[in-house]
Amino acid sequence: MNKINIYLKALRAPFFTASIIPVLLGFVLAWNEGGSWNWVYFILTILMAVFVQGGVNLSNDFFDHVSGNDEQNNNYSQFSGGSRVIQDKLLKPKEALVASTLLLIIGALIGLYLNRIYEGNALLVLMLIGLFIGFFYTATPLKLSYRGLGEIGVAICFGPILVLFSHFLFSGTISVLAFFISIPMGLLVFLIILINEFQDYESDKKTSKNTLVVLLGKKKSVKIYQNVLVSVYLLIILSIVFFKLPILILISLFSAFLGYKTYNILENNYTKIKELLPANGMTIGLHMITGVLIIIGLVLDKIL
Picture 1 (cartoon, helix red, strand yellow):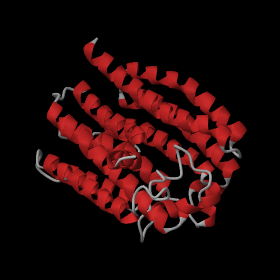
Picture 2 (cartoon, one colour):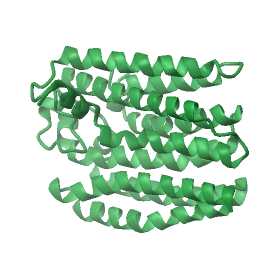
Picture 3 (cartoon, one colour):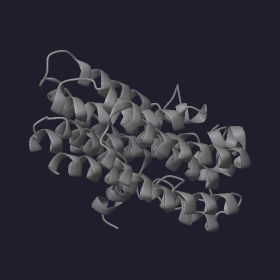
């Protein structure tokens, strides 16, 4: 495997939809409200989000290696346990850290450029919060994911932070509507992280990585998954009732069928490893499909 393919594996590109969907949602919502589309800002924001996410993925690999967490993990898969590039001797730990730092710097520089578009530093503040949470997800001394705070931190980054950032670029305002519709997106990423922690339970427990699944146990975590999943669809409905978001975003409720099927797999297989894998992938699909359907609803409302 050449170096380019190794780094692509380390970046975990299939997970980039977690960044791309909320960025697109923020832009489309602003456009729906009367903002003018700007392809340069859109592409730069996507690049910023992807560079930062890739940098954070690499830093997580490095710090989970330092803690011994990934070395202890014998139940890793394409969804959890890191990219394994360090454990498989494809990259040296220092190479992963250097690449992570480079990507985070590039992402930050793009963010600083975009911050110059408007007076004030709203975009800068949002970017710094995102960088802080992302880097200290596994980095010392905070190690948020080791303290039961990683899941909510990720939800904040891939929900409100990215949606508000991209919406502000097209609208120039911090929008209550954008904030409210960003919450379901953040909660769906919360579920991606949560369900991936089931397979990591043993290694996380050995290395004192106190994720929610370790802190609450697998059975209670299944209920958390269920409650958060229901909350996603309730919030979408409430955003229409109380915040006058377009009724056409109700088409996103069709993804609830996939959500129900995913939850059933989790409920029946939460103590198993391989049998749970379809639910891991389906949760990623649930985030993508729900987000895309909300975006389609906003586009249809604008053009019809």
